[in-house]
Image 1: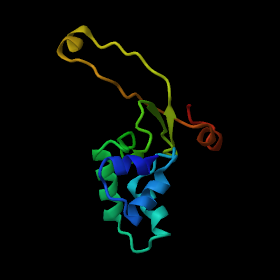
Image 2 (image 1 turned 45 degrees about the vertical axis):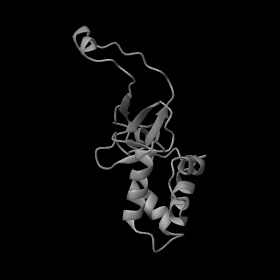
Image 3 (image 1 turned 135 degrees about the horizontal axis):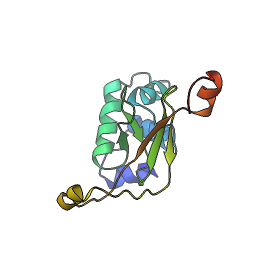
Image 4 (image 1 turned 180 degrees about the vertical axis):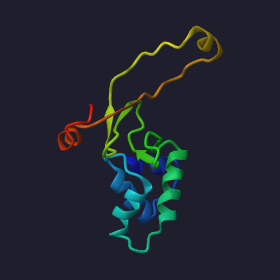
Length: 139
């Protein structure tokens, strides 16, 4: 659970942080800080965007959430920090997890210079609902 990870990292469990954690727990939607802020603010009207953003940054700093940069328009956050990849719809922005391990061989000249410790593959395409709404879109 995320609350246990936060406690183990030495972060205080304030009511605001607990609300953010409750929103993220099991969330596979890859929300942005804005998404989290709007969802949590319903329960805590006095919560500021800065509180949400700073909490996410602190959680990211200790490895509790992962920041995704797949969406050029905004940062997204993933509470699943286990190694996996992502696929994003270019039309609606939906992001889904891909739990397959991809073996990628680097060119020899690059492999000589680096010791690879992992990878993260990002796929882009068009989801079925978007293709059905606009049949001319390639998938």
